[in-house]
Image (cartoon, rainbow, N blue to C red; front, side, top):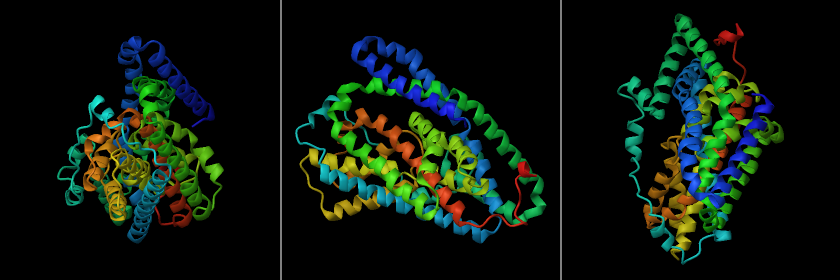
Length: 417
């Protein structure tokens, strides 16, 4: 991905911010038709183009990544590292979030009426842990792909890749077919990325124009606390992983990964950003295809550090608004629920609110209070998605640097000969 595309995306984001805010302040009556017929369709077209590639890239890359690892022991070792990394980083994220919220105290009693004014929030029921684990196994893999059930797709892809790894040379033709499919998908993604500046402009203009200054101002302290912790987590936690575990320069890492962060900010979806994230990790960070193809799709599904930060700050914020103190036991409960829930959280926009509803219910806080933060949630959703995909890349880089290069009997990529 060329640097001029990065500049174009950043310029588009700034222009979208200014245009959306300007229309909200000075021509509010004009904003709705312009958003309906221009901003929203512009953003939706880009989202649809990139979401079109999500299932193909996840399935093909995980099959290749699993088969490319070859040794089942190596597969288990990398899988253990990946899941362990995300569980620990999510724990760090929510502890940072709750600590910052307790220190700053963004919630003030007396703004509860805002919930009534904004229509509140209707909670959806989150699946139980047992249901999530059982439903990982698809009864119909094709149906799972049609419905975009990411955990089921990942399970089936690992299963197929495991079979290719065990059968080895007997399935070389099938392996080559998958490798060629991967090359095709990456080429199509490169073409789609030329539409990214237009999509970014439409998405940010629609989000900011719809929220407006009033919604942002009313939740300003909450907004700033979440934003601060997101940036802190990215720089300190992921920067430390890159520096001390991967033995790389964090500035080099963030500079090379910046284009993906800007795309993630625009789409607010880890899944939609995945194709671009993998391409950048392989081409600009030097992560091997087998590692990137295994770690990053899993990260896009279970790494929800940004969502955990939102849940931590929002829970403390809402408790403060209702003048209700959280006990140590309740805070530990929030941490455990947020970490465990992240495993079953799909990488789609807005899913964090469903998980937050579950957290609030467990600690006895009113779920309808989520209406307080709805005004700024879309903007924060964009930022926390950028943090999530950065964590995926940091994990992939660390795993790549701590695993040995493929041995001679490991399958080479078709593109490598």
